[in-house]
Length: 393
Ligand code: SAH
Ligand code: SF4
Image 1: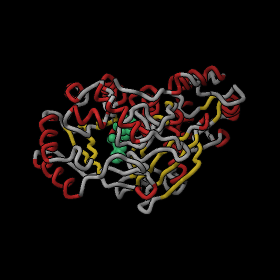
Image 2 (image 1 turned 120 degrees about the horizontal axis):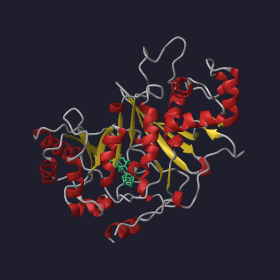
Image 3 (image 1 turned 90 degrees about the vertical axis):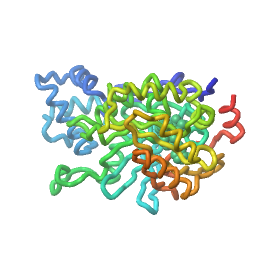
């Protein structure tokens, strides 16, 4: 039996409207919903779709934060927008910049909850690691987020809002002098690898990614977006068929015994159920390989035998194996495998014909690396004993 932290959305309604009770946040409204809302608001324009594209252009491509700046929209229509909508994005309450340039943002959401978003600059790209939930209901024993008790789903607007606030912070908007078409974007990739299990918040994640991919929205190619899941088997095929972005699986172990301990959702859907699902994944091809994430934990899952077992297990699935040196956090019950061990593991996989990059930890000095996220003010933490009790019960 997997014990789960209760999801507080089950009993707390997250306000969707401003405190004056009238205005709706325009950020995160899906195309369909916004068309309906615009029409209800009184914009009875025969070119409603074109109007929506213009509004989205201002919001998502130019980053304006005030309706009065929407220059190509009539004064009357702007007044209607102002009367019915607000432009709200989550507030950055703390920003930390690592020695390596990684930026970690702590965000305050409606209701006072906090999540973290991380921007990782690289030579050829800038990746934003976004959160899909406050905390996580799953309790992977090596993940700091999994020790957080408070959990709620993020709304579509809070998910897409993370991209907007990072673009504001990075000043990643076109100016008169440089159009974004000519200037490479600072934020070019998005990974759903922050706090939370995105497949437990599928609809909000899907709507947010539609806006991220829409040519009138953030306009990112679907191949520049990766969703990572711990293995919510019944939802996985929808990533390919309904969102169309890239898929990553937090695999981390080659036997059910070990995976049950590391990724307790394995007790619900085990390795064989997960791999069967992946063999039938809608977008499976050599050009769209599935990424298997594999955290390297000293003496737990890092032997040569593990590497060989991994190759046998994934046979037939176009895959890339991303090795993640374990990122330690205070009180973590594991240690990182040595560099020699990680290299030996990578070599076995590489020799079997799979790409096996070793992920370079980023932002470790500010606790921004994979699995280190956890809002600072959320101090209540489960003890090591509690975690072990949960994963063994
Ligand atoms: N819940 C989703 C996405 C968020 S976790 C999932 O589990 O896939 C993003 C990635 O970070 C996952 O592969 C996760 O296993 C990994 N991760 C978690 N804690 C980690 C840690 N302490 N060190 C290294 N990677 C970690
Ligand atoms: Fe949740 Fe992913 Fe962390 Fe597991 S690894 S606890 S699924 S965020």
